[in-house]
Image (cartoon, rainbow, N blue to C red; front, top):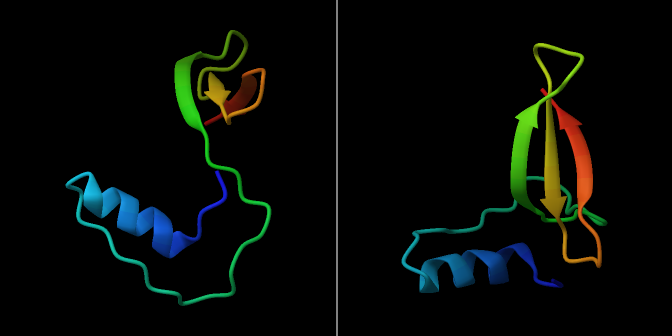
Length: 66
């Protein structure tokens, strides 16, 4: 999805979610937006989770977070 931050805010507003964009820093390039499909406890760490994330590619990514 190649949308600017303002375009994303506009789309969210169209969906009934109030959103606005204020630029207070330099813009980020290469930021990827993903949808978390599944999130489970990490098998070897109590404070971590393993999430399956869809970023629009052909495959999902396993991401460790905590």
